[in-house]
Image (cartoon, rainbow, N blue to C red):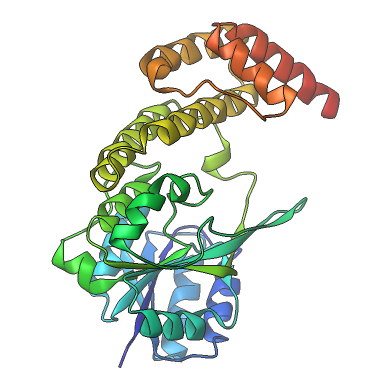
Length: 327
């Protein structure tokens, strides 16, 4: 019996891919299949996929034309045979006891989704992030905890969760085509159909942060995608907890704007262009933002106050000066 289908979209990941595959092969549990979905790689990743799928019967390689991460994950879903589905990124890796612990926990609690912690790793940092919640929740109790859950750092990620294949297939859930926050929309849609959720107080996933990743670069399409994601989160989560979501969503809108500010500071855009873009973004979501900054550090409160009062140019200038001092 195949209990887990592990789906890995692969695109130009030759530098990291073997590390991930090795961490999966090292698992202390063997009732899984690994689906490597090669999304049109040309850097040697496709050869690594073929090498491992030839050698190990539980590994299958699917080659397809480049269509993006959502397309690759959807392809994996359509070929998955396991009772539960796990989505991993090709440049990350997992701890040895992940699958055995997930299997025991899901069986014991009959969980429809298993949420676990992760380590954020870079050359300069190693930090652990655990879910804000812990233990098992049915959907009635969980509805009261939605505001807590959606504030988690990785609420909108799929790589720190195990999903039921039955729920995915019964509801015909697939990843949408937008390039940013597509996994967050998938999570929101999935949560509409769960009965039991388990939050682990252990970390199993190593999220390896690459400074050259698209996540850390400014892209003008990002805000439209992020805005759509936030709208979807509010819509779906309000359906579960109609009275408690708005304030938390205000914080998420605020953090999304700040994320755009920080990426623009590092971009080659002139201060004038940065201000123009941020004014547009603020006009679109000003009334949605939670501007309260009680108990936040002074630097953060100052940035929010300046944005609230339309002093965008000062924020950009101060942050660029600060970056130049550090650089």
